[in-house]
Image (cartoon, rainbow, N blue to C red; front, side):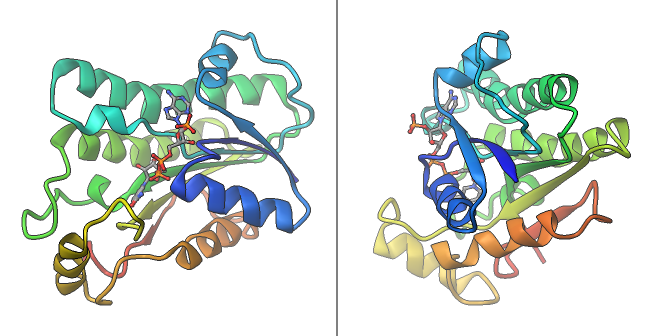
Length: 207
Ligand SMILES: NC(=O)c1ccc[n+]([C@@H]2O[C@H](COP(=O)([O-])OP(=O)(O)OC[C@H]3O[C@@H](n4cnc5c(N)ncnc54)[C@H](OP(=O)(O)O)[C@@H]3O)[C@@H](O)[C@H]2O)c1
């Protein structure tokens, strides 16, 4: 497969990129800056892309719920995902799959016992889940579009206190590790009759 990936240098995106490449797939990482150029139609070297995975986010927008951060989060999560999907659909007859990476906070509001994840992040993530459904209907039957909603992924960004508090409030008693991430991508890519779905990988946090 030939993949176009955003966020391929990030915590989750780098795991997805490494695993896809290990399986022999071609992966183009649409890096920060290039994503904006691509949306303006100024990016070539596309090849025969058959899969688009949107995993970009800019953590600077999480700092406060200012108007600028609401708009910034929404543009990266939703508007860019929409514009790239539509452009690929038009340019690549080979396009078959779109996967948007969302979050458990797009399904339920942040639990104050676990985190103070900001309101605009959850709202944009909820919109991504809906966007996958819209694309699934509008681009069918040529293209399947799905979402994956992860719970918190353990990394050196989390304090020990946060990890413990999080783990206490999640049925499976721990944060996701990087080993938990790729199976969901593989599952969607390998199932040709799944579209418009949101696959939740969150240790039970949202139930
Ligand atoms: N981490 C978690 O615990 C978690 C949990 C649930 C869901 N998620 C979701 O998973 C996705 C990835 O999260 P992450 O934690 O892996 O993110 P991350 O580590 O912060 O990485 C973000 C990625 O997006 C890129 N990026 C930043 N701004 C961009 C822009 N304006 N245009 C294009 N690319 C840009 C970054 O590139 P640079 O290398 O240039 O910075 C980096 O590759 C997000 O949608 C997030 O909401 C994350």
